[in-house]
Image (cartoon, rainbow, N blue to C red; front, side, top):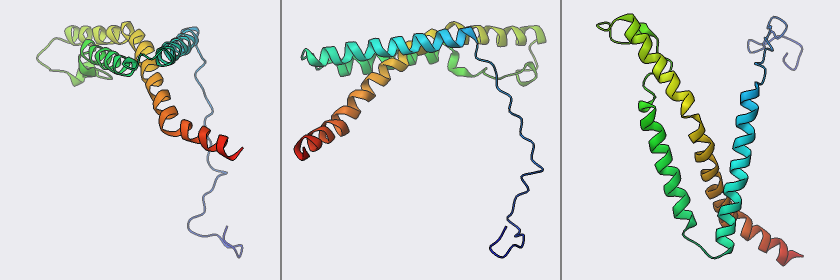
Length: 149
């Protein structure tokens, strides 16, 4: 409504909209993956900041290199994700339908079998990002607060 009670051309009729509020239920496998991801992240943070506290400053490069290598292996193992979301109709028509479907099934099996790598890659990246956040923002903020108090 506009200011004077008249309808403007930009008003939206929200009464006519019916939104579906359907959510997929959280599966047991998703809960296990989230818990594994949380535990690996805590472990990576503990190792990273423990090494920093002990004076092993090369841990930054170790974590970055390990994450880069694992990410590269993940992409190569999944063949660049070229068959993700593909249907047999999208593939080369010179191949038989069974062979095209077999290729798609193998790609899906590779995706699920390599999912564990992400539970290692993400914590490594989070640990390095947490250190960067601390070094570039929080250290100065903590010092500033200490100076004020």
